[in-house]
Length: 142
Image (tube, rainbow, N blue to C red; front, side):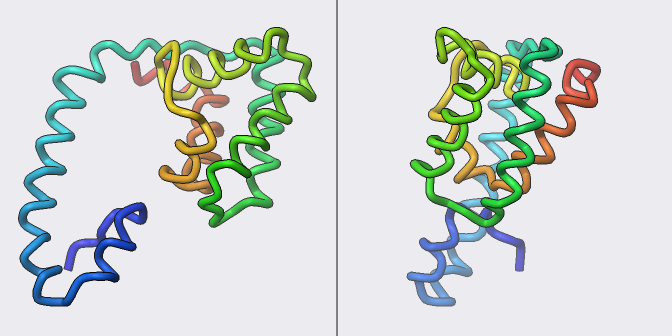
């Protein structure tokens, strides 16, 4: 059986095994549509940039702080953590910190509440994303 995304796990635990089996082909089809849409419409608009020295230090601190939150899905707690890192590194206005996160990690000027993104994407996956960005691999891949 294919591995279902972590964020939809509650849906599948609440359904019967027979119903679950019937949903898999539909979800696979929808996932394929989503991937094609991303590759055709979203990916070409992404513009990643390298972090400044200040942003690099703050992102590294965020990755370190997220290590203590491994497995967390508490979006508010994760958002507060991101907020605190931005304050600690004296981003003024604080919106500049979030804009840096979106540009460096997501290749766009704005995005979702980053705590919600971390909760859905996964703490460990977000840490890996930060490491990839700090290594310059997102800029190279674009």
